[in-house]
Length: 157
Ligand SMILES: [Mg+2]
Image (cartoon, rainbow, N blue to C red; front, top):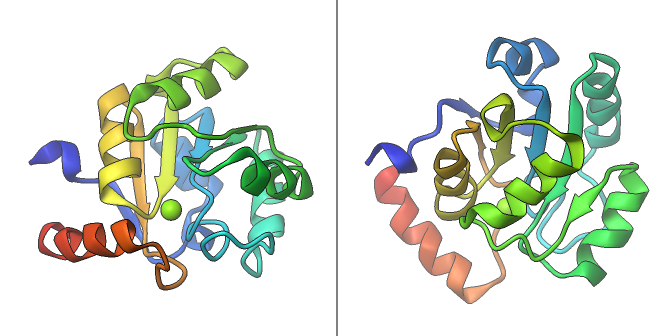
């Protein structure tokens, strides 16, 4: 099922360069938060993430967090990183991603999704025609439903 396949796979977000994003035609990056930028639910960004964000910004590419998590989780985290954000993004549905694209006036086709989950980030990114970068989750899941999804994902990855 091609909608469940990313175009690019990386171990960690820090391995993705501005050149990689530009080569993919991305003007805007739609960033997942949990297990992509930090451990699930953590307000502490993964080591190197703030510097990575600065590097990408310097290259002229815009960044926005699109998370399915709540405002109380995402707002302080995004503010700490100096990024705009969409919370309760309802991924894989297009509405959160599309809202983020509208904030920047960028077409979804000129955006890249970076995230760690096939059934939210990859499926949602393919749905809107974005370039999809799948990363390995930074840490173990604590949420029961995500644990179940991970078991299924193992057969697809
Ligand atoms: Mg995630």
